[in-house]
Amino acid sequence: MLSQDIKAQVLKLTPSERLSLISVIIESLQDTTVTQPDRSGAIRRMRGLLKTEQSAPTDEEVAAMLEERRVEKFLQ
Image (cartoon, rainbow, N blue to C red):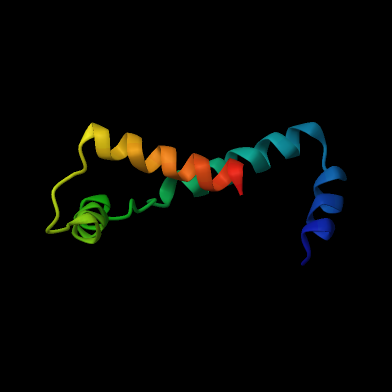
């Protein structure tokens, strides 16, 4: 049955029947367990992607990189 068909059938119900239907739907959703993805595993994998042998750039190096980018962006 298509969702439009279901909607049409629901609208034919009395308000009391609709409330009962809502209760049944809510109960069915509460019985299901929503599994949370393994976040810690994903975080470990992402950290591995970010690892590098180089040290972090200094504030001066970052400022120079930003300046280079601005020159490229606005003067070309």
